[in-house]
Figure (cartoon, one colour):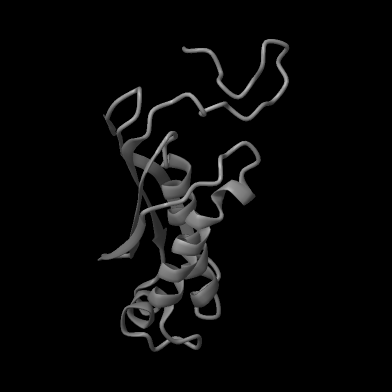
Length: 155
């Protein structure tokens, strides 16, 4: 395992200095799933729940969260993202959320993609909880990242 980059030589937390790194095109894709009953899934799919268009709210929340990642996670750099996309796919008993973030910069966007997916999922829960409180969010994970010194990675 490599040295932890967010700790200095005395073990204190620090923000990594990326000032000397070259700007490169970087992207990251993350996903997660929310399980729900068929009735709740139907209401989410057709927008008939008590809070209306669940997917639009979740998409906007995910995009906003990606832009705020540096405010939410203490040692993350605030980044000027070029793009954030949130996509939904309906499954038999839930919704899969896929978030992608990209920029040209000195540090990766893995945390932005993971934050976007997580907040989109939490928003789906919030928007549908009047219909079902027992929904479960699961398998939030990084699917791939591209660019940077460490190169590309895929799950």
